[in-house]
Image (cartoon, rainbow, N blue to C red; front, side):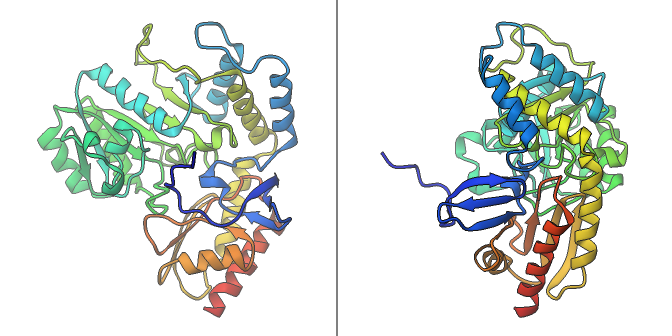
Amino acid sequence: MNLFNVYPLFNINPVKAQGSFLWDDKGEKYLDFYGGHAVISIGHNHPYYQNKLKDQLEKISFYSNSVQNELQTELAEKLGKLSGYEDYNLFLCNSGAEANENALKLASFHNGKSKVLYFSGSFHGRTSAAVSVTDNPKIVAPVNFSERFIKSEWNDIQQLEETFEKYGSEISSVIIEGIQGVGGIMIPTPEFLSKIKELCEKYDAVLILDEVQSGYGRSGYFFAHQEFDVQADIITTAKGMGNGFPVGGVLIHPKFQASNGLLGTTFGGNHLACAASIAVLDVMKDENLIENAQKMGEYIENEIKDLPHIKSIRRKGLMIGIELDGDCSEIRKSLLFDHHIFTGNSNDKTVLRILPALNIKKEETDLFINALKTVLEGS
């Protein structure tokens, strides 16, 4: 049997990782400035994280959600305190797409409505409803398409108001990323988010903040939307939550009523996933990683902003989009193969996406800064 070939692969086979570095099967060392799509939040193989998982593996790794699991309670309490959403409830699942599926379903259960408003440039996942609110026709199969899903333009308040005027009584929820990642590090304006919240309250729609990529300290706030003092009804999270262990979560306002069987999952919230997630929160708190994301992100921007070929830098914390004056693919390849640095791209072919671990150190950022300078000045 062969693998189903859906991924364009670089000819690199990482076999070891530590902190912000990877090593391939030939012994070559790479700086990881992408973290596997913002997944690596506290660095590869952090010793505290490793020990938490090893200790848990020696006790129990899995049982279903038909029994008590005190680790879920510990995770919910620590997540509530660090995020500032202590009065919310937590549903655990396995991925960002699954978190968004459950959020959309919960909203519809809550108000009995069926339409969902999403935005241009969005990416919310590849599963049924999540891909239907993703702005990429190439990955939306005919079975996923429905007129229930309505697209509005990003940061366009006028169109937003017109859409609510037309469909407001039918709109169950509005789903928006705290910062668009795949879309090219697109940041919502405070006015746009405030208007969405206002219209959701007026029309009894649920505001879902997708913080799958922009959450968990990535933006310099625990959740990116918290910079704008907007309270979401439902928040989804995943990538940085487990530092590589598959886990996702839905933070749910107390106005939503739970009932047996309303949501469910086999693997979500298993013992190993909880141990990984608790370790991430402990390290984030003890090592002040949200503050470090603010500090290091600002340092990187200041050091590269005047380099040639850079048109703009879109950044919050360590979620950075470097807009170039042309396609970024050759720059990315040069960074990878000539300088051994992993970076990312986006749906906007001119945007180089930078998502290093939240505990990145200055000397490691300097490796990237110097390499980018060499590549851009030589191109």
